[in-house]
Length: 112
Length: 115
View 1 (cartoon, chains in turn purple, cyan):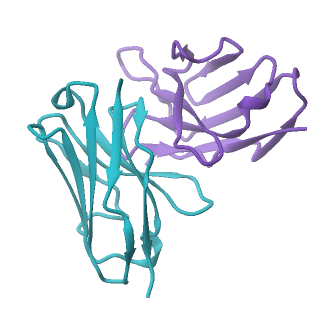
View 2 (cartoon, each protein chain N blue to C red; view 1 turned 90 degrees about the vertical axis):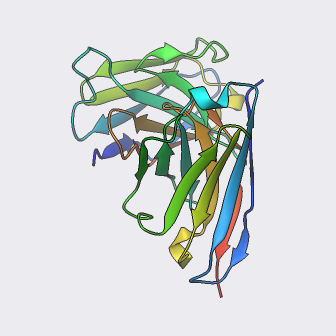
View 3 (spheres, chains in turn purple, red; view 1 turned 135 degrees about the horizontal axis):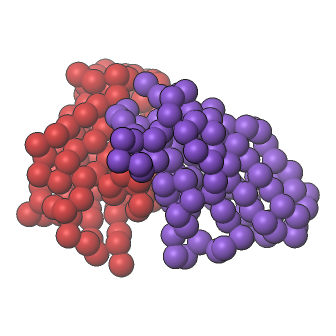
């Protein structure tokens, strides 16, 4: 199974400041056709997770452009350029290269 | 509008059984593979089962293999999870999710396994 490791566990950021979190996989998520199956989700308090970014950096249309994903191979990053109060929750990365699908342990974003 | 609604959660004793359902709407259900993903209280996300659109491919996590059975009824736009031999560690909120990368999730159904 592919192990996904997220850091830090908790991120405390002031409104308007940037935030960055890391996700590392135990093996490359790059498929032979060039696609990389790394996804980011946000689970707001009391809600179901929602997909934010797919294939490393492709943002869903409803996701604000202050969110961006980057990385390659086994190392990935989710950045928020200017944190807003509505961004609080736990962020999870997930690999979709092979079954079983596996998630990172999550990074909890708090507002200072 | 894509909608997934889980039902069937509840309290069950260890060793017991429970059947979860997920009603899908707002998309052509048979075109999408589906998964069940669970979240134990205060914990992270665990994928547990996958079924292809035509139900020809089915996969399970080792933690539920042999105890849980995923199925779907494309005529009724419905996904199911039959859970047998339940254990305390199966206590979780169970989500149905559409496709990989789980672009849509239900609101979840709480399953509590306790005597």
